[in-house]
Amino acid sequence: MVIDILKECGALLEGHFLLSSGRHSDKYIQCAKLLQYPDKAEKVLSVVAKKIEDLDFDVVVGPAMGGVIVSYELGRQLGRKAVFTERENGVMTLRRGFEIEKGQRVLISEDVITTGKSSLETAKVIRKLGGEVTGIACIADRGTCTMEYPVYSAVKLLIESWDAENCPLCKQGIPYVKPGSRGLK
Image 1 (cartoon, rainbow, N blue to C red):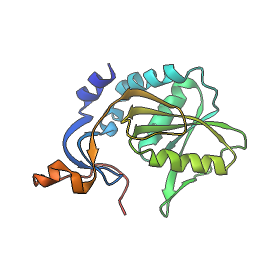
Image 2 (cartoon, helix red, strand yellow; image 1 turned 30 degrees about the vertical axis):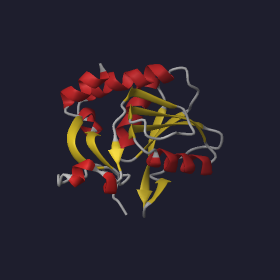
Image 3 (tube, rainbow, N blue to C red; image 1 turned 90 degrees about the vertical axis):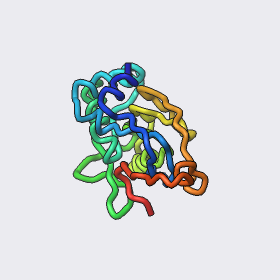
Image 4 (tube, rainbow, N blue to C red; image 1 turned 120 degrees about the vertical axis):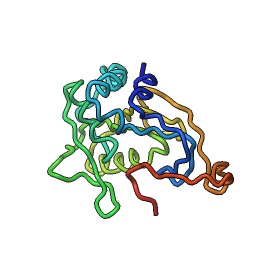
């Protein structure tokens, strides 16, 4: 069901993509294409909500951009507070008057986990504020990283990626596009 909905929304893209990690891939998951349809997002995220309905957590925190709507929808479905972190001067932070109380149990939410960079940056913020990370929820787990927290995804997709030097698409002269929201250094 999840793959069908992602395809129906045009969220599974094929081509040559520069990922936020700097790696290249021939496939990309553009969850914004899914999240523009609240009814479809609700269905996909209900798969995740079902997996975590018995998980003990107080608040959902999604890193901007991809985790904002995901945190809201999971919070809505599970009756929990939902907030987000964002980068300020390149550093992930909790702003806008949002708070994590000492000892609060926090679920991190994402659209797609590839390297886990945004989730781990968010976890660092949560721990610094005295919160405890209970896991990471996402629409799609690309399965390319080992996380120190349990990951609860609507779908796990094994999508190959390459360093720029070893990218077969670059070697063929195919130009890439950078569809993600995070800039590269």
